[in-house]
Structure formats: structure tokens, C-alpha cells
Image 1 (cartoon, protein in one colour):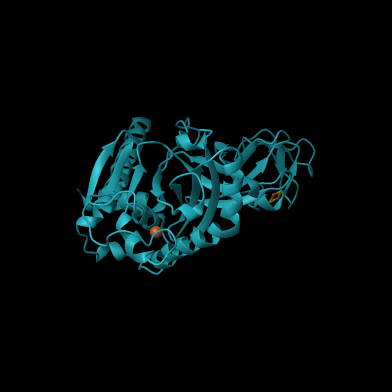
Image 2 (spheres, protein in one colour):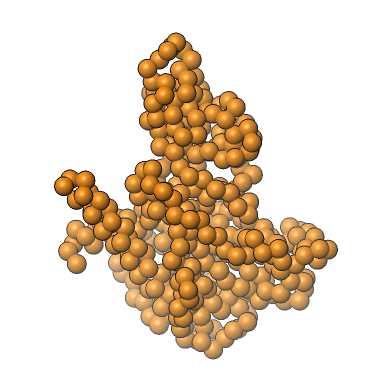
Length: 347
Ligand code: FES
Ligand SMILES: [Fe+2]
């Protein structure tokens, strides 16, 4: 592979693949009547809700002189810039320039709008490789809609590239070491082999000798426009009803040195046990889980940005190698499609 192609692939993977949906905020962060700024994939965005509660998402940029729209105000279904009042609708079209009657800017559409969706307490935005292309379907984990599951979403900003968070999730072995002294991850053998099994939409990396003891497997769902991972953590009886504790994780690149991690913490409980679980979770378990997540975060943010150049992978890193390969394959396909479109347009 030529060096410049390799570099383009690496740059695209590092910034975050396009033509994908990414979780960008918790639903509760976007309150009625108030714009909310987020950054993802290196883009500054503004989110707001129209009068019916539906989400709108634009580049956080006023086309008049560049003020952030997120410092403006929501007017009906639209957003108005605080600086001189220019008003845009959810498509990025200027609908009014209040300081100037019959201004020629009205009706123009200079600001990029982003498809946006909401599910299971989170907001997802689609980042297209070319603006205005049709978004791929947003296919979310079945647990989000199956009624037997109850979930609690936690979101955390990590000051590391998102690839470190993905590598961490594709690496079940770290549970027995990094989290060895935690409430739920203190069990099981400290030596094992790993194996990989294909699934319909990705792969599972799993410990060979140990199941049901610890964080023993992760499923990486990669072949979708909204990739995520799934893993189970066996629970001691003291943690109440509902069987293993399931985690669904999404990772969002913010920029090259920062990401957001979204973890849905789930159990299969309904009715009264559901309320007991939610209470127990908030009262005692949540702090412990934050502690575990902090162990991950602290380790990852203190690794060098270019650790990849000096690492020495071994058998346990099968999942790490596989998730990286999947990102490279997708980046290759994306760049090939872009190049083909550029050639068509030039021809
Ligand atoms: S910069 Fe937004 S209205 Fe002037
Ligand atoms: Fe971890």
C-alpha cells in the first residue's frame, strides 16, 4: 500500500469514520427552548428542540459573521443568532434577517444540517461523508426496545482518542488486572487464551477457559452505521434480581485527542424488581461503576498518543487487532467511494 494511501486511511480512522451515526449527548441535556452545543468528529454543532420536541441539528455557526448559534435563542421551531438576530430553520436555511427588511440572504441555505435521532435517553447524529447524502439506517441494539430490559445511561468525556476506548472494550483480559480489586470484577483466573468468533454484524472476542465469572467476552458490532459493543458482567447475588449486568457501549470521537463514551447499564428486570434495581443502582452501585470506569479512563488518558508505534501485541490482543482491522477496512471503502465520486465529478 502506498504511503500516502496508508496515511489517508490512518487520518480518517483517527478523526472518526463518516457515514455513521454517533451518540453526541444525553436527551436530558437538550432542554426545550434552549440551544445546546456539542462537538463531535471535529465539528461544532448546535442542537435544539422544535415546538413539538423534535430535535434539530446544525453546524454551530451563524452564516452572517460566524457567531456560535448555540449562544442564540430558540424561537418557535427555529434558532436565532444572538449577535444580530439572523434566524435559521432546522434545514440550515436563513428564514429572517430582522435588522434588514427584504434582505437577500433570506431563503439561502448556507449552514449544514445533520440528521438527528433520539433513543434510550441519548441523541444520535449522522455524519455524512458528503453533505446531503441520504443517511444509512440507524439500527440500535435490540435491548433498547425489548421491554424486559431497563437501562441507565452514563456518559463520560475521556481525553484520549476514541480508538483507545475501542481497543479497551475489545480487550476482556484487562478486567482481571486493571479492575481486579473492584466489586464485580475481582473473580476468575488471571491467565487465559482468547478466541474470536464471527457474528452476523461483527465479532465476539472471548476468553477460552472462563465464562460467566468476569468480563469474559465482548461482542463488537461493527458492520452497521452505528457501531457499538456489548458485554456482560456477572453479578453477585447481593446486587439484586436481573441476572448479569449488561453493558452496551458507544464511542464517539470528539476530536483527535478526545472522545465521549456512552455506556448503557442494563438488567432484565420489570415491575417492582425494576424499581428495586434502579433504586439500588442509584444508591450503591453507580458509584462503584464510576470507579471502574475511572480506572479505564485514567489508564487510557495517560498512555502516549502514539503508543501504537511501540506496542508489542500478544495472543490476548486478538480483539484489539480485529477492531483496528475493521476500522481500516471501513476507511478504505470510504476513501475509495470518495475518490470514485471525485473522478465522476471531474469527468
Ligand atoms: S453573526 Fe449571527 S447575526 Fe450576525
Ligand atoms: Fe475496563
